[in-house]
Length: 148
Image (cartoon, rainbow, N blue to C red):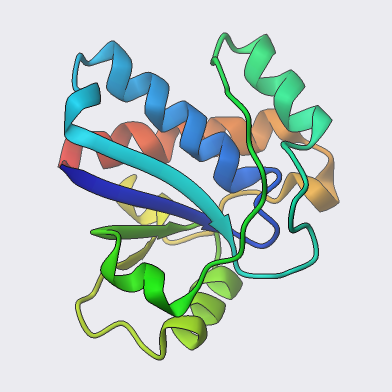
């Protein structure tokens, strides 16, 4: 089983969108049994909060099913529980490395790197453009699935 954890700042927008998009891509590929896919936050700001309503609306608009989500913070012990950590931006990468105390097994990667792009996933919290974030995440998740 491949254990993938998506990470963003608060885990109410980008990382849960990535979780649900990836779950749907895996389902469509008939590979559900091969994966465990979750999402968490590097910050404590949104702990306990669910999927942000505009993120939920964008998933619905694009036909991506989603389930219950409750923001949880990444912990040092998660490093041994997952095979791959996929972050949305440079800041998430730095914060995750701090939480883990490094990345000795090279498990941390930016999502857009899988799509051959050295950039961050657009942050809809500031831009309010959940459509752009969705497109970035979909492109990254499709490329990630191809590599796995």
